[in-house]
Image (cartoon, rainbow, N blue to C red):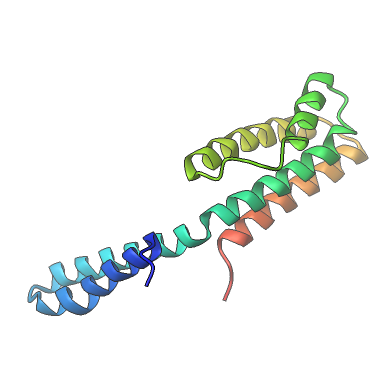
Length: 146
C-alpha cells in the first residue's frame, strides 16, 4: 500500500469511528468524536479532487475571459482579460499556488462582472449570462448532486 495523504486521512477516520468512539462512554464526547471523523472524511474527499477542480475552474474562467476580451470596450480591462486568457498552460500545481491564481482570476471575474452590469446592451447581457454559467458550473463541480 502506498502511503498517501488520502490514505492517512482514511486511516485516521477509521480509527476514530471504529476503534476509539466505541470506547467512549460519554454520549456528548462520542458524538463529538464522530463529528471529528466526519470532518476528516470531508477533508479526505476534498483533498482528492481539489487540484482537478481548481484547474478546471481556471480553464473555465480563462475561456470566459478570452471570449469577453473581444467585446470589452475598456482597453485596460480588455488587455488584462487577454493576458489572463493566454496564460501558459503549464502551471505550478501546488495547492497554495493554485489558490493564489484562483483568487486572482476571481478578482478579475468580479471586475468583469461589475463592468458588464454597468452596461445595458446585448453583448453585456450575453456576458452576464456567461459569467453566471461559469459560476454555476464551478459550484456544481464542487457540489455534485447524487
